[in-house]
Length: 373
Image (cartoon, rainbow, N blue to C red; front, top):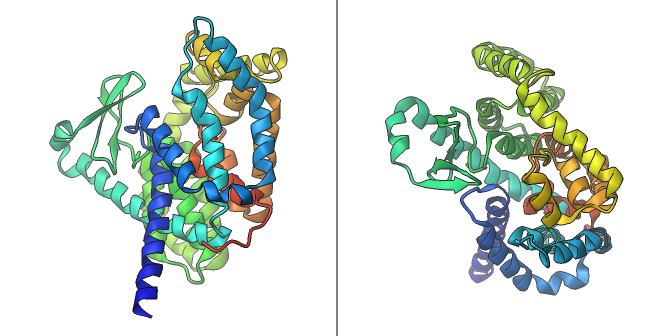
């Protein structure tokens, strides 16, 4: 009996470690493309026996990627370079489909939430350095993400913009707008999947989201708190108190976004123009231009895309875009709050190919959702 318990605990720990690895591969900026490729190939090798259980929808997604992937090879034969990113996109779908075979939907969410809660607590620890010991931040290790250098303590990243340190909660993610997705997911799962409300979790997740200073994050947080109020009417008093305490923080975030990212601003133009260009590219290239074509032509000319939907459209065309939208609709039908968090966040962040989210796609697309995990 004791041996069985130890074995069960070991299996549980391995699955928790596996989900944590999915999160790190998805959002940690200090993990290079090469290391991500190696880790995902290892995950595929370890879980290859699941191929017989893989969702039929996975093959549909791969077919949608086929023509653009062939374009990648053709473009690479010229002057354009074939990078690891070209392999990474289809590979994230394969990993997601294989991992999804191993987990029951609800048990996966429960395991995921436990890890996200710990990451939320660690993010608040990381934020404390801004206020308690800001001079220590300059001693932390550095990493380069695209062309910018930032600092990290590995469970928290300190982001610099135009040479200035941003006092925002980015947690383990490459930017605050991505970390808010994780925190809002954790909050919604905690509220919806637990028999009793855990106020410690609600406070940690809410505080973590507020400190991201993400407009999208605050919007989704309001939706999550409505979920809480529906379960516990008395929570509205605590919410009013919290709004009073953090009113300055929320006001500054919203006013900054309205001033700097609303219609007519430079930031708005920097997002609006690429979006228009993406739809123009979709008209002339309905099957996409491939990742090599995207990287070589559009990024060099600063015509790239910043959200998930137009990113998919430009790289892989209408086929994969329709597949992802259909998947989000399926998630909304089963767990509307998870579907809404992903769908809304993908309007402002290019996270569609993160392996954590492709795993969530296929958990809801599985032909058989009875696997226990």
